[in-house]
View 1 (cartoon, rainbow, N blue to C red):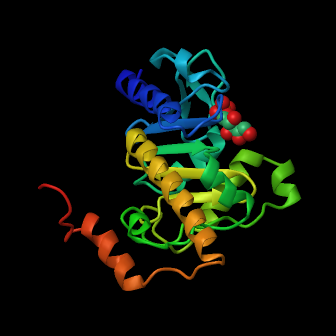
View 2 (spheres, rainbow, N blue to C red):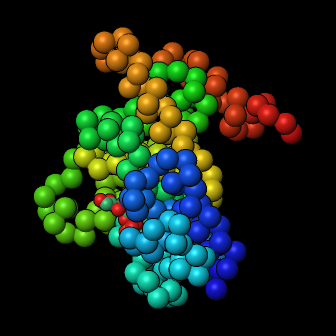
Length: 231
Ligand SMILES: O=C(CO)[C@@H](O)[C@@H](O)COP(=O)(O)O
């Protein structure tokens, strides 16, 4: 079942250590097959260098039930599912505890858009969620995490800023497929690092960049009038 997607998702998971986004098994990638309503995700707690496509777990988008796989799915599966349910355009989701993005999350701060490196990929600051309430943490924690993310994006296009920092936790990133979501996670980590350095050099919390420059750079790469790269 979904052999190609399993291969893609397995490969995408193996990219996490390659790009320095994870320590031990602290991250997961999933991908969705919208036609069947099935999600393929990494098994929980398995070392990346041991992962094989056949180890991937297939779950139902509707209720998270496992339809194929002998291993337990990622502990963050319910958060991934909430994101897929909230936005039809999402095809892949990544969660890591990458050092710089997680540091901003632990500071309960979003990553401000300070320059064009950020604007090329994110059409504005990457937000940080509100802190979760005790009843949310004690309830269906992972699903509630997904709901708090979705709440953070109320009235916004999730594909224009395809990342969030969950307060006191870490980043979740989404894109049209699993590989693209990993690539976006690399960019997120890089802009998180740059924003930290920028504020350190300035010695203060910096204001957001000029919105005209933000639009210019974002729209060079996205939308109908994009002209970056080759046709
Ligand atoms: O948040 C954590 C650990 O605190 C998890 O995201 C991380 O270890 C990955 O877990 P899984 O191996 O995907 O279950």
